[in-house]
Image (cartoon, rainbow, N blue to C red):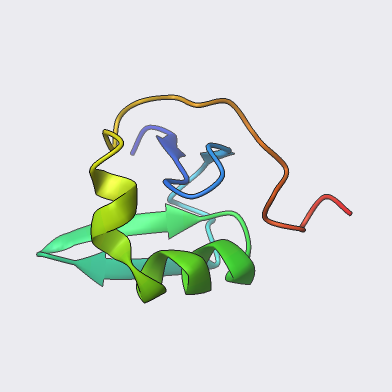
Length: 66
């Protein structure tokens, strides 16, 4: 499977090795860190409205880089 974009922070994630994922409306979304997964699960629709395939660039707001 090709790399995907974490819908919360925009980081590229390898779904084959991603430790964090969530199901929403029959689709699996992958995350770089548990904080991004938690944020997504609180309001998934808000992230999909931005365009789930849009690459925003890694914003480092997820806290995993700190």
